[in-house]
Image 1 (cartoon, rainbow, N blue to C red):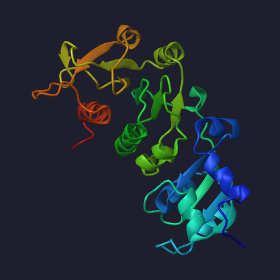
Image 2 (cartoon, rainbow, N blue to C red):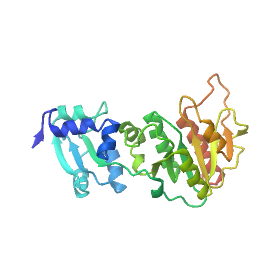
Image 3 (spheres, one colour):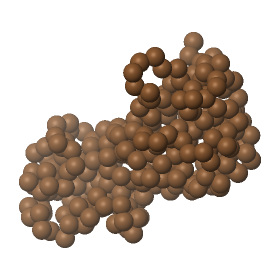
Image 4 (spheres, rainbow, N blue to C red):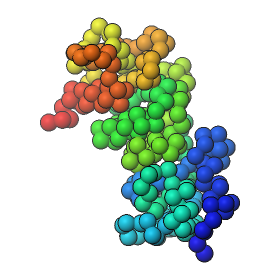
Length: 264
């Protein structure tokens, strides 16, 4: 049976999951896109439902079979219905409902000398997604929101991350809880501020570090700066006084990798 009505209860349920309160109430999230879903499945995700539209699917492989084998109930929908539930402008015919990703610190395992990225109150899903892609590319041990201005299950975080959300361990925690957790693991807290005294290339980032970046509009709060072991700046020479937070995070992360000799 193919769902052709946008008033179908299943369709309304999917649309409701676009809202954070409903995602938190249901403990579920949406993943749209063939590539993103493939990464999620490869990472061990077990979808609840898989909405698919053969008319829109441009790639035919065993994705449907793999999703069903992982526990998804397949639901075929018409093009009009899929275009209603999709949040992309050019949907590819694949959208799944998954259980929400656990975000407790207790699920993280960071080795000695590890690197984690901490995002303080970063609101824009596009920036969070870009930082997840950087974290995946760099092999980071975790990305932690502290506090979480946007939930990890936001569909636009999933989209911007290109599926990296499922490849990189994520968590969220309050600042005090997280600082204690970092101290217990001997991770030096490295904060980035435009007025910091030390250039990021001159700081010692070769040991275990937690790189902390702040919100797009106001940067890091004083509380994080007071907790810092190392305070660094990224030198800038133009008229604009700050970099995009995702670009800043990428520079700091790759400097830490360079100091470890991992870019040779």
